[in-house]
Each structure stands twice: as C-alpha cells, then as structure tokens.
Amino acid sequence: MPEHVDDGRTSPPVRYRAVFADRDGTLNPDFHYLSDPERYEFLPGVIEGIRLLRRHGFRVICVTNQSGVGRGFFSEARLREIHARIDERLAKAGAPLDAFYYCPHRPEEGCACRKPGTQLFERARAEHSLDLAGSAIIGDRSMDMEVGSRLGLLSVLVPERGVEAEIERELGAHGVHPDLRAGSFLGAVHLLLGRG
Image (tube, rainbow, N blue to C red; front, side, top):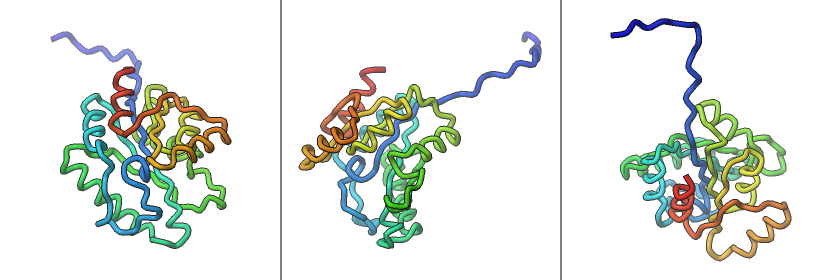
C-alpha cells in the first residue's frame, strides 16, 4: 500500500446540489393557514418526485413562509408538529426531506427571512454544504421565482390550478420570469432531471 504523504493541502469541502421546494401550493394544496396536522395532504406526484430527486443525489429542502404564526393563528410548536407529521409520512414513503426552514413573521414586519428574502436559503447553504449554482427551486408564486433569480437557482414555476392568471400578474408586477414551467411537482422534477 502506498504511503500517504500529507502535503499540507486539504480537500475542498463537498458541495451538494439541492432542490428547494415551497410548501403550501407546491407540496400540498394551499389550505390558507393550515393548523391541523391531520388535515395535511400531498399534491399528486409529490412523493414520487422527491424520491426521484433523492435517487439522483439531490438534497430536498422545504422553505416556507408561515405568517400564520405571526398573525396568532397557530403557534410555532403547532407548526413544528405539522412539519414532523410531514417528515414522518415522507420517510415512511421512502422520500424524506433533508430539512424545513420557515419564516414565522407577518409580511409587514420586513424581516430578512421571509421569501423573497434569501436568509433562510443562505442558512441552508451553510448548514448543508450546498452548491447553489447547481441547485434549483420549485414553487407556485412569484416570490419563489424571485429567490431563484437572486441566488442563481434554476427556477421552476408550478402554479396552483385556478390561480394561474393571478400568478401571471404577480410575475409581471415584479418583473420575474421563471426558467421553466410545469403542470405539477413531478413534472417539474422531470424537467430538472432532463437538464442535468
């Protein structure tokens, strides 16, 4: 066996590709301030899509605005309970998420963690050794696409059915253009994998 010689150089840290996913309207229907873990349900194709991403080596991280906490509709403890329930169901289905990051503030508080702010994504990058240049975001609103633009993420818009016209107005008002569009989370995953 050849002798190992320490020349003082260290290997660069491993960086992982990630897909950031919005929660309400992307992983699940938008229930408008869901506070009951038992009411949670996944949109069609979400579990299969997460499985595919993980099989292809992506980290999968949910980043979500949850102003219901700041508005007093439910507590952070209840929100963590909902996320634990989601984690449990996804793990049983062989499609675990790597992490949840959430902003609990109301929009008018002007915090840096509420999307389209990038603070939570920067935190995820540091805590999970992520390569943002090789990563993507899947979401249903213009704020998700704006985050993608700010961070250089490949952005895929999956508008929730029935509000497509509203989303187009949002995109126009904010001057944001998604890189790709899909009709479902699973469709978005296939588009991402097809590019890579």
